[in-house]
Length: 112
Image (cartoon, rainbow, N blue to C red; front, top):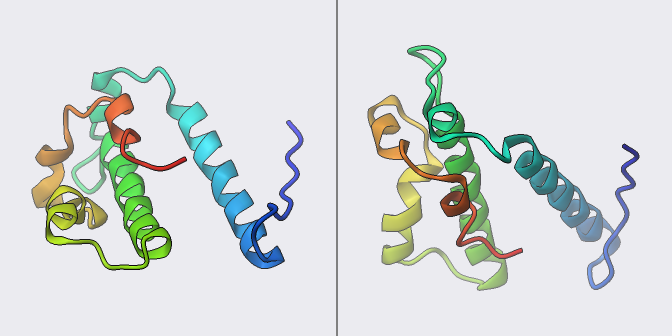
């Protein structure tokens, strides 16, 4: 597969390249996990790791925070922090909280 990262129209050249790279990372990540079962998403490879589902939720939460700050020009509000804030930090004590989240829910609230 040939990938050409080019500046996107509507952005300065450097921001356009960054957005293009982020779009590519999102697309390839989604392709890589498409079709994973709940057991696969919740599988914990070892006591010091995280599940695939937890890592995907973390990526989605960080992206959501950036979207709010960049596109809305503000910090996340209290409701958004309750919904997404915990997911920006992956700590073992929260691991069980992340289990049982299907793929379609992980990326549901993110702007394209």
